Amino acid sequence: MSDWLISLEGTEAGRNLALILALQAAFLHALFGALQKGKTDPWTARAMIDVCYATIALPFALFAVPWPDPEIWSLFAIAWVIHLGYKLAQASAYTVGAYTVVYPVVRGSSPMFTVIGAGILFGETFAPTQWLGVAVLVAGILGLAVYNLRHIVIDRARLPLALGLALLTGGIVALYTTWDAFVIRATENPFTFLAWFFLIDGIGFPVGYMAYHRGRLPKPLWPLVKLGVFGAIIAFFSFGGIMLATRLDKVGEAAVLRETSVVFAALLAWIMFGEKVGPRRLSLIALIAAGAVLVEWGG
Picture 1 (tube, rainbow, N blue to C red):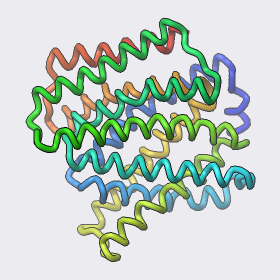
Picture 2: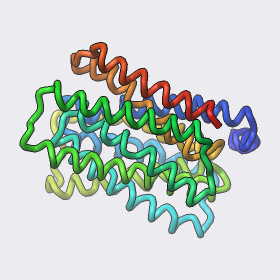
Picture 3: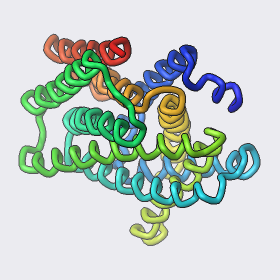
Picture 4: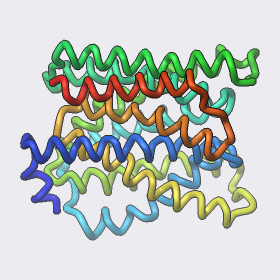
């Protein structure tokens, strides 16, 4: 399968597949975020998801894919540090802020930085219409955050901290998207990157969680295991999808399309948390979708 995927790089078929993978990642990323803001506290949810996807990735990394070349290990180490910072910032943001406020700020603050980073690292360029699309999409996402700030009952005293953590998380999202795209392109087999990434990335957070709780397992354990397995599967297809999309096509375009996850997040918030989606929010969601269309077809 890896040979077939590599053969699509730089082709129209590869571009179309990258589009599908980026939109798939958008939906699954919104679902992944909602899982972390459910009944389980985000720290426990994150630890369970990580340990589950590391466990599932272990046999694939050891036996199913080629081992990374020696020079790749240092790149993995940098990726591990970046993702650990992302998890800490995201879990902290979800702890102090409402999901429907935090999530749009995180996703709205990252596309512009990712596009700039992809231009510096990969020499990618955007057409004027695509830049307009980025502006429209970001305006829709941040407009959704402002709307939520005005109409959702939240803890106003903790709002500055929540927004600060959300902006920090958005910046780290842009950093890890650009860096991981660099690493997967540097790895000969893209599935080698994915298998080893999930194995390495899934170790740190659970170890830190257990150390903080002095080795005590969370209870009740079985519902958390089910949450962890479900979240791990979502993570494989969400993160794996967006990484394969960055290998097949432009990093900036894939990253911007992924931010349509805010559209899915609003729908999930309505379905899972009973939050209302009125005409104003629908208009902002439509603006986000229009921005994504401009980015994809404006090149």
